Length: 382
Image (cartoon, rainbow, N blue to C red; front, side, top):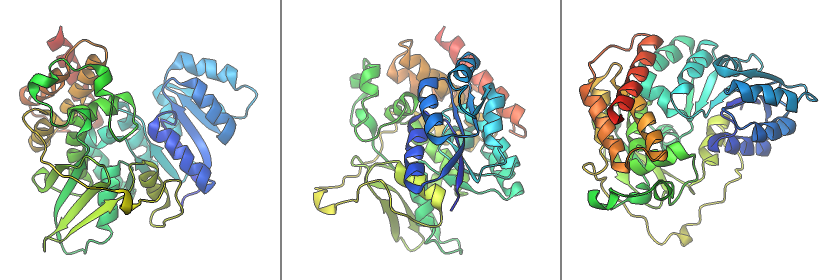
């Protein structure tokens, strides 16, 4: 088990829950980073006493320096600060819980510094999957998934024999707040309604992605890279109760599932303690209190992001980065009241269809595709 953690995105949902796990396991925190929430970051610094901290917002970083000048923690800023935390020598494991495309550079930097990574930043593998997986193989680095679905698959895979016995991956989806809704019923939904997730407590961007099913589309691409599977062999099933976190099916049609209460601290802890298991801060699953578990096919026609992501992966090259970049902008525009909820799926689908194929040989290829996709969406909305 690791003893020293560097946490990128420590003030977000995954970051704060990682610190809950660190308290329980009495782990040392050597680095913390945040985008701009310096109030919470200061509290974390005073409790965990990391040697370094980083704030992406440079103005906020200067303010934090003044606020914690009585401590021994050094404060860095911008992408350089994030990269410093991602490559710190005094660290056994980097937890990347940064939201969005901004997490790609730190992931590659950690890998090239030969740091194992526990990652909840799915955009990293969506946009730069080939770069990340090739770099991990080259540097002998292990990627431990923190997303509940990919952690569930990873846990089930421990029982998978090495003779290509895996037939299918089955990702479970909660269906979000709009499960069963028709296109007509979704035309005028509000941001507040989209943020009202029935089971999970997550940040705004991820919660909107869950409502649009884009989150599950991104997870299909992530699973394809992580477990070397074709998206045609990755199914999605809507499981409203969020008790089964995902499943794998073997060639003999036997299915293994990982179950637990919908609490991210279980997959976070397993990523940190793998292959060992320890007492968890999460409650035990009481089967006598589960009245039923239901399963449904996703509505691919209404929630267009699912098919858009599958198509993006099949087209290959930089197209998944295009899909991700287009979604990040569309998601934000919806939260800002500039577009409707249904526009998100339309915009992502149009970006995937209209961009020309290009290989993703370098980080610059991926970053250029991301930038172009964002500009495409802004111009489309104008």
